[in-house]
Length: 78
Image (cartoon, rainbow, N blue to C red; front, side, top):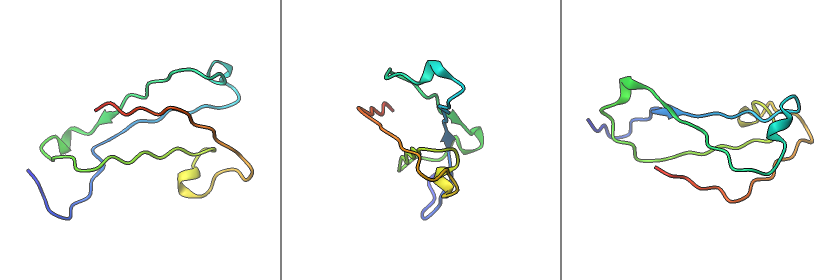
């Protein structure tokens, strides 16, 4: 099923790196699994959006002031 001008989030993945989890403070490879919503299984995806923020809820513009984020070598496999 393909709908023109229709917007839906077919899936979402999230990984939280915080000061409490010291194992995630090093440069390393990480895989973020995407959880897909089965109610959209018949829709044909047309776009991929990737949002990375330096603080929790930074994508909503309510993150911590002064926080920084360094990202290197992002690969998207789909």
